Image 1: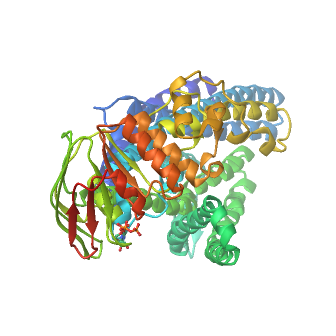
Image 2: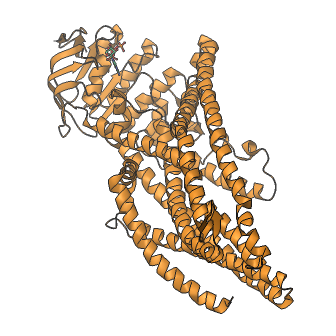
Image 3: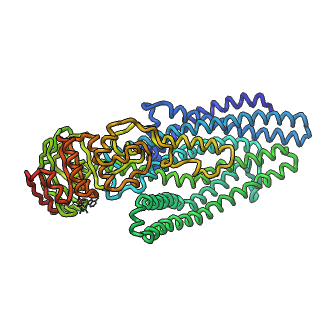
Length: 638
Ligand SMILES: Nc1ncnc2c1ncn2[C@@H]1O[C@H](COP(=O)(O)OP(=O)(O)OP(=O)(O)O)[C@@H](O)[C@H]1O
């Protein structure tokens, strides 16, 4: 074999095959994206990423990855030829040729290692960019126009959105790449090794008929039959994998809720109920896992048998020609190697069926997620004019999701400095009215005028974000303190480096949790400290920059006072207080309302509450009856 010529041939082969593959790859993607369900799903999710109008980079990178994949195929062909050279040298007892083969191997192996590393790097970099783009897309859509909230009003909501955004995106990107490049690799290798095998195989007599180049035909028939059977056996795995993701996510969610509501559950001593629920969900996971095991046993058992039978097959067929000296030992070994490669390549489709099954399940989940967002955004909204600087409601009718009338044709107008108290029996629709004004409630019609950005809603249990107390106070404004998570990430990197020298131990201890992170430098911010004093949380001024789970540390009354602090920071034009003082004693409640009135004299206050002590802070009162009827009373003692 002339290895100098081989080098030139390889360059020519690579350039020709590259052009052909590039065209075929493009046409196939185009065809699949138009003609198959999953192709359309893929395009719906990622068409934007590959659009040249956005950037040429993704397409160019894919083209480069394709080139590296083909270079890999060519290297395998060269290795196959090398086997022939080496075994022939051994058979001829040609020492010089043997040592030359060793040098050749060193050169081929070096190129192989470099190509593999470059391929790994480019594929990973590409996946990370693609994943970042897709994550931003989904996250943007999920947060846009409150889809994360409104999807709960859909008839068929969306389960485990967290899993879909975090996990499925990663799997989708990785599998798209490995599957598509796997197919290219398998197809091109199939052609290349078929040609090698064609040159090496001879005729075979079967039932009195002589089949020329029998081995090539036999391997194709063999793998084709095996693939068809494997697809039949493996089909149920698609559904089982889909269910596996869902059941695991459901179980994880139940565990997260146990953590979130640990105190309430502990007070109720609700361990039995929780345990039943958790065990029930885990049982689902396990029974599905068994179903996967049994189905995989059949599937893998079949695959293993097919692969094992293929090991001796080429030797048996070529043995006669070898012993009659028609072919050399090198030829025999190359036949076995080429047959093995061909078998592997053709079997790619059979073996990858499993991965393709979960890939389709992932596609279903991601497109289902997108569809739910679209539907949520199409849910009706009241006519919201959010450019006004006052609050005015005309003809507002509010229903429950099952069409029970809550409020009928409400008219209301409030000017700066007004204070309105909404009262009524439980379930009358007080909170729902606030939801409607916020634009969150789809089941209402009418006209609402209100300011756009200067609204603040305080719920009975204020939401405290993850982070420092300062961030909780300024929420929803973004505060430029260093985030605990940032520090965490640095620490994780350090831990990863520290553990790289030895087997990782006690990673839990090496990576600290946010609550034990070194306290951040306290900001000398007089406003925040002053506000804390005014809302009677002066004892917390030195802990403003402590990152902690504040919703667990602060009592409900303290959290409600912190929410009043938010009002003072935000200076809203309209503030909604939904039972926002329920956990305070009457003295504190009075102090908080007076404080707000003193600091925000022009803010429109709309409170929801049952306590009669609230009446004195509100000159107007709206009474909801719960059956659509309502009444307004004005000029109560302020
Ligand atoms: N997401 C929902 N799906 C179905 N029904 C809902 C939903 N949200 C609220 N409702 C129903 O709408 C009605 C009004 O609820 P809302 O929370 O507004 O009452 P409320 O007057 O604030 O009561 P409370 O004083 O007890 O807080 C209730 O009957 C409630 O069950």
